Every structure is written in structure tokens, then in C-alpha cells.
Image 1: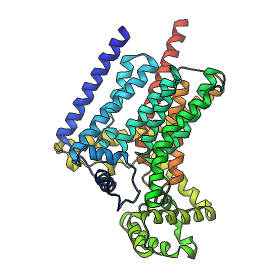
Image 2: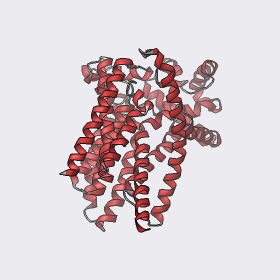
Image 3: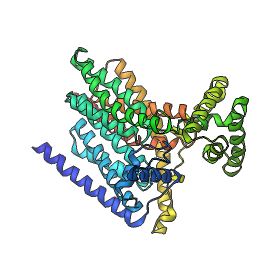
Image 4: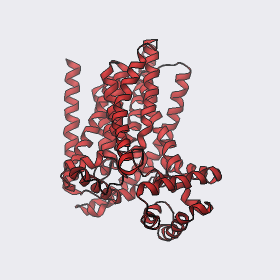
Amino acid sequence: MKIKGLLTNKLYLLVIISVAIRLAVVATYAPIGYSDTGWYYKFAKEIVSMDFSNYDGARTPVYPLIIALGFFKWRLVWLIQLLFGIANASFLYLIVFKATNNAKFSFWTGIAYNISLILLFFESNLLTETICIFFLLLSALLLQKILTENKSAPLYFYLSAVISLAILTRPTFLYFFPLILIFLIYDYRKNIGTYRFLYKKVTIYFIPFIIIVGGWSTFNKIKVDYFGPTTLTGFHFIEHSGAFIEYAPDSYSDIKKIYLKHREVKIQETGEQTCTIYMAYPEIQSVKNYTIAQVSKELTSVSFWLFYNYPGLYFSSVLKAFFDFWYLPNFIDYWDLTKLKLQYMAPILGFIVNTELYIWIALNFIFVAAFLYNIYLIFRKKNFPNSVLILFLSSAVISLSFVQALVQYGDNWRFSVALKPYIILVFALLYFCFKIKLLKKRSRL
């Protein structure tokens, strides 16, 4: 009863502070739209009207449903995202409390989410990050419950459903499904001691994924002749191959000619070629009479040809994308201080965010070192509290840094935003482990 009281009191306090912070944001800031926002808005209208005559399969349905839930009013959609932000801070609390049974420590972990201006300002961006964080943290909470106390079949079902919703928010997180499956199998074998009945749990785990992700991919196949959560796969690959598309064979001459023309303009305007495809694809569609799905298929085809024949250029681009994920934040493109009502605060907030960016860079290096140390301890069979959960959280971030680098180049730092709460969790759990270990050593002296 005492533990429950601590949990309730600290959690309530965290929620109150979270609400107060976001009320201050509402009073002083505004929702910010981007080029992607219009694409989500278009799809939301198609969902509500059930008119898919102009459907292109480019965007997945979860965020458009949030827009529809906000009645297509950006301020209302913004408020919904801020509510998700409050839930995200609370999930951090619940995960840490379940792992440590320490309400005070859990409270400060939730506060860490709230005071990160990067995460807080992203809640005002009319993009998928905040919603995706919600599903990723909920999946971590469900996995933690399976790892620590309850391996009942419904939890496997719920976990798979949540992961599937994360995928239909941002398809990049498709790798989460097999990654979590690996940890579920490892944990089941380790704790149950046999594979008996495991196939039933795995079958249950697959069902929501097949229905939700497989069903959506089938819908795309029927509507636009493209099997997959999104038709933009080729658009992502060309971010790599577009840098050396001039080496493509004559069979791709139309796309090559159009892309090179727009690439030159893009480089003159911005100094880099990334996102050229979004300038070029309307002309490709017009010249070749293609749908977006057909453009994507041809972009995938030419990209794979270039990757195979010029692997050095591809892997050089992948390497840059990988390091951009960890080292080159570009947050300046994802906030707008001109929207700030208290303009005298703009320089102060700018200084704080720039400082935070450097802190995140340092934390990223420490995080990678901690991941390697965690692997070392597990191989040495030096178990410590929450080691499997910490390994999962770490593996999820490390895996994303490779996955996104292989698929896309350009603005790679943005991919890390959705998993920054995982990094916070890893540091919180590791710190608590070392603190307990240190206290035990002192007690023996």
C-alpha cells in the first residue's frame, strides 16, 4: 500500500508538472507545419471521405487519423500531440518505477523528458514523432511486463498490435517486429527452460502484425499495385543513389536526365542534393505517365543497380548517414522561434537548445560505450538488474542507426528523435544499477 501511495503521488506530481509545462507552450508558441504535413492532411481527407480515387500510398494511416481526430484544426491536433507528450513522460516514469521500485528516481526520469526542449518542441511540429514515441514507449512497457512478470498470451498480442501501430506511424520502425521477437524468444527460453508452447506465443505475436501491417500492405497492393506500408521506399533509396545517378545505364535515361536537372538546382540552392527527388518526381510522373508507386519502383530499380555496380559510393553515403544520425543534429529546421509570442525569450531558448544539442552528442558517445559494455557483461554472464530490458532499449537505437543509414541519406538526425526517450531510459536504468552496486560495496566495508 505504501509503494502504491508513492507511485500515485509522484506520478500525479509528474502529470501536473507536465500539464503546466505544456500550458506554457500553448500560451507562448504555435503548431508548425512542414511539407510532409500537407501529405498527411490529404490522406486524412481521403480516409474521412472514403474517396481513394487519388490515393497514392505515400503515407501510412495513423497520423492522418490523428489529424482527423482533431477535426482538421491544427491547433486541436497540436493539443492532442501535447496530450501524447504528457503520456510519454508518464510512460518513462512507469517503466523506471517497474524496474527500480523507486518513485523519486522515476519522477526525475519523467522530468528529463519534459525539460528536453528538443522533445518538447517536436510536440508542436505537425509530424509523426510524438505519436511514434507514444507507441514505442508503450511497446517497451509491455515488453518489460513480459520479461519481468507475465508471459500470458494476451500480452504478446497487445505488444504486436502496438508495434504494428508504430510501423503504420513511421514505417522505418518495421525492424522493431523481428527485433522484439528475438528478445521474446531469448527470454522465454531462458526463463521457461524449454521451447514448449513457445510456438503458440509466437503465433499469437504474429497475428496482429499480419492483420494490421499485412492488411495495410495488401490494401496498397490493391489500390496502387505496391505491396508495403508505403510507396516511398524508392524515394528513400534515391537519397543515396541520386548523388551518383549519372552512372546509371541508358535504360534509366529519362529518370536520370530529369533527376540531374533538378539536382543541379537543388545543389545551387542548398549546397546538397538530398530531397532532390521531391522536386523531380512530378516531372517524372508527367513524362513517363507514372503513378507515385510506379516512380518508386523505378527509383528502387535504378538505386539497386547503382548500389550493386558502385558499392564504394553507396557505402560511403551510408557511412555519412550513419554518423549524421549520431553526430550532426539539425534541429534548427524543426522549430520556428518567430512563432514565439515572448520574443525576448528567443535568444535564451536558442542558447539552451544549442547547449542541449552538444549534450546529446556527448550522451550518444557514452550511450554507444554503455551498449558495448552491456554486451560484454552479458557474455561474461555477469547479470545485473534489468540487463535484458537495457539491452533491448540499446539494441533498438543502435539498430535504427544502421537501418536508416542503409535506406536513406539526408536529415538522418531526425530519425533519432523518436528513440531519444529510449536513450534516457538506458541512462536512468544503468545509473540506478551502478548506484545500487556502489551502495552494496560500501555496506561491505
